[in-house]
Structure formats: structure tokens, C-alpha cells
Image 1: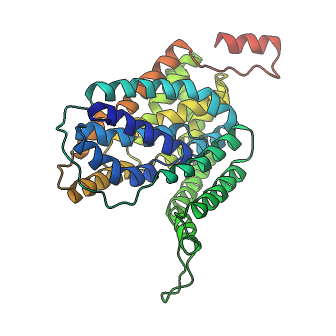
Image 2: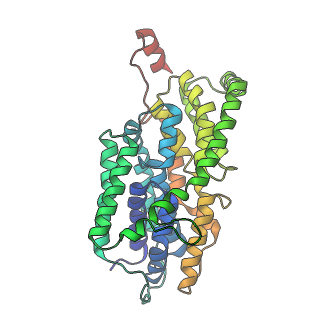
Image 3: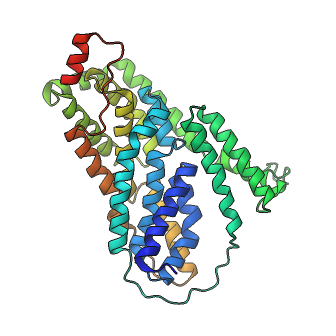
Length: 365
């Protein structure tokens, strides 16, 4: 019975839940859009805000899920504990999510309710049991298990549940070698789908090492500190602004996090006594704001293409790609980050292992 803005809010929550369990915005868009978008339009939801609700939910998972590539990347670059940053980041992310839900509730309706056609997808409530696999991954990560172990348990659980409810078969997981000389299946497709991204990041790491060995970034950090930054508060604002700016020209946010996190954010945060977890939170969240609005970015282009295809399949009008600029989660998260940096909310200052004078200096900063 959900219609209009109520359905838009439900779509946002569904995308949020899916992306938290999978850690991928792209996967969330591909999985939910073909069903949620046409259904919502037929039930009176605003097409632009409905499409943006899916994008917002995907961005939330990318900025928070313990198994998202962004989260893992910033934890690596800042030498931060992924369990700690998952806890410290929760108030920032879910405050932005609450603001987004209010926006969707206010502006997500206004369409005309009509009778939806029969969807071709075979849907069953038993598929909700696969959410247990998401829960296993998240709980295992929060309990301190290694991320590879957590993912392995989640994959195994998803396979067992999928086979038990009849939604998967062994042939779906791995096909025999075909006439083309290559095997295929869900597992192999999942691995091959990220091969390009891995190679891209390896090249980025090579560039980063050259930049670090040259001493250029150290000179930049010294110049920035002498010219602009005098306090930890100013350093945090600089981290947020720099991350947003560097994600604008780069079409994927993980390489941007690797590039900036190692060469700029880490030295700056260490110099001003900013905890690794705090630096990781600012870096990851900042990289998931403006990045999700720009049409030349991979995720935005994928979102627009998927929405357009779903709309064309049911004879609906697709919102323009510029609708991504309406995305409330990105704007809300950016606002929350700046307020946090200015007010000190959710700030963590490392004091263990420091002398009394060093602790006082850190607190003063």
C-alpha cells in the first residue's frame, strides 16, 4: 500500500540496507533500479527523487559499510582500525541519512498512481533470507574478524542459503569451460569484474611511491601548514575540502583516496595530532559526497544508464543525469562533515603513549 513519497523513503532504506551488506554502490544500483524505479513511478513517486534515492542508498553503503572498497582503502592509508572507524563514523553517516529521509518524505511524491504492469522478474519473499549473509559479514567485521575472513563467511552463507531456497544452482556458481576456452559463473564474474580496478590502483600506487620519494608532497604539506593551517580544526577542514576537490577530476573515488590519503592526509593528520580513525572518517566520507553527483564519474554514468533502461522498458520518462545534483545524502553528509570539523563533534584525539605535555598540546590543538 505504500505510494508516493512513502515508497521513495522505502526505496532509500532498501538501497541503504543492500549497500551496507554488499559495500558497493554499483551493485546496489544494478540490483534495485530495474524493479524499484518503475514500481515507484507507477505508485506515484517523483521519478527524479526516486532515482536519486537509489543513488543515495548506494553512496551510504560506500561511505560506511565495513566491506566497502572506500572504507578498506582509507583504513589502509591511515593505518586505522576498521572496526573503530565503523563505530566512530556511524553518527556522521546516519545523521546525513536521517536528513536525506526527511527530504525524500517531503519531495519524493507528487506523481500519478496507476496500475503497474506485471514485472518480468521472479520475486519471492524467501529471497529476503539472503540478507542473513549480509548480516554475517557485518557482524563478523564488528567482532574483530579479518575482513577477508568476514567476506568468506558471507559468501559461503549466501551460497548455502541460495541453494537451500532454490534461487541458485551449482551451475550458476561456476560453469565448465566453454568453446571459447574460458569458464564463467557468478564467482568468476565477480572476480573478473574488479580486475580492471585493481590494475588501475596498482598504477596509482606506483605514481604515489614516486611522488613520496621525490619529497614533493612533504614540501606541499609544509607550505600549506605555514600558509593556511595553524590548528587541528583548520587541518580537518583542509582534509575535507582537498578530498572533495581531488575527486572531481578522477572518475573513481578509491584511487583518489589512495593518492591523497597516503601523500597528504596522513602526514597532515599526524602533524596536528588527528587520530587515524578521525582522518579515515573525514577522507572516506568526503570522497562520497560531490563524487556521486558528477556525470563523468563511473558510478553516476552507470546509475543514469540503468535508470534510463528501466524507464524505457516500461515506457516511462527517465530523469536527466543532472538529477544527481538533487542527491540529498551527498549534500547532507558534506554539511555534517564541515559542522563536525568546526565544532569538534565526533573528534578523536590520540593520547595513549604520549607524555603529559604532549597530551596537553594535542588537546589544545
